[in-house]
Image 1 (cartoon, rainbow, N blue to C red):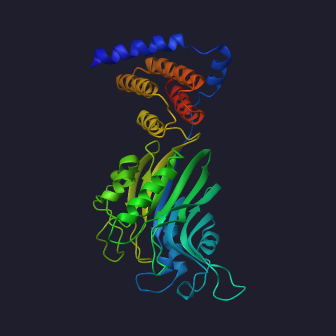
Image 2: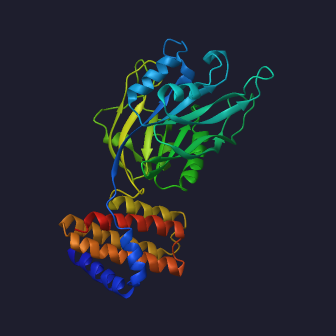
Image 3: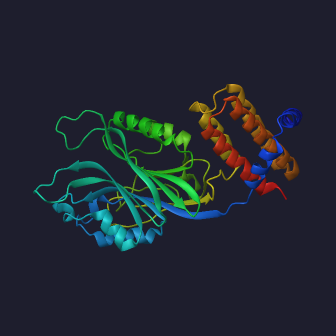
Amino acid sequence: MKNVILFIASFLLLLWVSLSPSPEMLAVQESNEMQTEELNVKVATYNVAAGRGTDGTYNLERIATAIEETDADIIGLQEVDVHWGARSEHDNMIAQLAEQLDMYYYFAPIYDFEPANEGDPRRQFGVAVLSKYPITAAANREIARLSTQDPNPIPTPAPGFLEAHINVEGADVAFYVTHLDYRGDPTVREMQVADMKEIMAENTYSILVGDMNARPNAPELQPLLQKYADAWKWSDEDEGYTYPAVAPDRRIDYVLTSPRIEVHSATTMATEAADHIPVIAEVSLLQGSSSYNLAGTAWLVDHYTEYGEIREEQTSTILQQHLEVLAYYKKQGKDEKLVKHLQGMRAYLDHQKESGAISDKAWEELKRDVNYFIGKWDG
């Protein structure tokens, strides 16, 4: 194995020499080589059950207290009423929570109906995000749904998949909030997972939270769980059950991250403010939104190969070979060789972009990773 690694290393080094960038390009590259700050963030998900606790009573103050006790910097909420009706006292739940907790918010209605009385606000129900950091852009994306408001529903694309872009002190993260179909038949959830996966493919530095209404071994969740990291793998707790709140017996609420983001821990928090309990994960983001390790970059190569942004199989293969060499030298603690081969990988990325074998988007993100690692290991 060592001989194979060294052969690949020699080949890639020769390739790097032949593709060495011009002095002008090198100057730009070197200006991008920097250490970036690691940002520790708590993210969470919580189905707030339209503000009703396990006692069946609506109490928004109790929900606000539970959210505050999670200590989350960013939290996705499901079953949020906005002027929906008497069950939540016609409140705009998310606006009131955001004001009380002093957080930014975005609301993505699943249902958006005319008011019961002319002149009243529209009746809405959906998902939301609260954030201590600025939300720079947001959208209410469509996924398949089987309406609970239609007497004869059929699966139809409908809103309620929240996408928010949040700037965490220089780290731009795409934060998604979802609430999947509750029915025993998994067909609609299968469709929803496929739709979410396609939407999330647009952003590789991302976090997905929500009530999936399915346990971790459910077949319909596997396309997500195989692609993204389940934060619960970093938990010291056993089951991670989240429902029902009084005596939880199943795990149906999740925090998932792209493998480019470092997860430190995950936990649940006991509360009877709603019929679910929150899941909280501690993660680290990097300024500039770089992958925190080489495995994250390997995931990025696979991702862009899967979605056609790396357009030639040979390009993907050589990039993965670069990463295998880098992993070998990292294990050996040979920083000088790491930096040399990272420079080779950077030159190769430039050449492939110029030849059209890799898209501008894939080139930019992979280049950002390489520059981060050079800054990390160079001296």
